[in-house]
Amino acid sequence: MAKNYFNRYIWLIDLIQRSGHISFEDISRAWRRSTYNEYGEDLSERTFFNHKKAILDTFGIEIKCDRSLGYFISNDDDVQTDALKNWMLQSLSLNNIMNEGSDLRDRIICEDIPSSQRWLSDIMAAMRDGKKLELTHQSYWRDAPHTFTMAPYCVKLFKQRWYLTGLSDGYTELRTYALDRIHAVKTTNIPFKLPIGFDAREYFRKFFGIVTDNREAETVELRVDANQAKYFRSLPLHPTQEERELEDGYFMFTYRLVPTFDFTRELLSKGELIEVVSPLWLRKEIANELRNTLSMYDDVLEDVPYFREEDEYMFFEEEGK
Image (cartoon, rainbow, N blue to C red; front, side, top):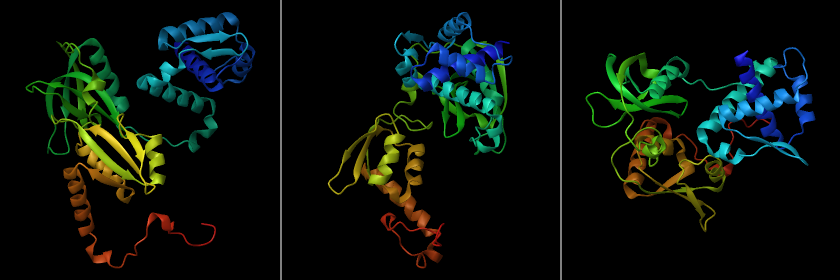
């Protein structure tokens, strides 16, 4: 029953969020059609107000009523700017949508997140309770797994992989471990206290991804064509992203961060769509990586025709493809 009510809360939040404003009559009408309404019952005002209170207590989401427009989420802006809460609600809402439209399951494709279900709940419980973990972990650079004890500070999702950051015994600096490379997790009875003032967002603030180091942040400039700039705007690479239009129709995107391995890999994945303008050392590093990549294709490079993006070259030239 508790799970049923939890699903009801998510269903109600999603309905009001998508509607903007909605009357109680329309909420009741939607409830009669919902698969979560197991017995086809009407939604009473008393039940609705109980749900409202539970939603506020559980998620911090406040549902209010405008007499002329209907019910709405009064702090929706706060929900949208809270990355964790927004991600959680989107994930739960998608789960509800799939449950209500079970005939669409084979037509909805999601990316897998390795080991998120297996270890994440134990790790988060240890974070909450202030208990150290005993991890058995094997990085890609080790021939065998090793076991150690660490204090779990925070977790981060990056490119469909969960990572755990904390202070491992024997180290003075924080280390980060990928959950999909963990062989076993055991919660110990050893307590730990999170350092006063530790802020996970602040810890990763000047980095892209999960690789960190002790360098100071610097300004990075990328020259991007007009089409690719649209993607940069819709999904910024970093919170410090700024842009300005250049005279040649291109755009200059500027960042203030530490260009670590994760960031250079991201830049290389864009290929010819971007140009690193500064700093000079990063421009040279990217150029060297591209030169090394091209060297692997020396045997066919002369036979490959050169096409610019504006040529709109397509591999399928047959009409209709």
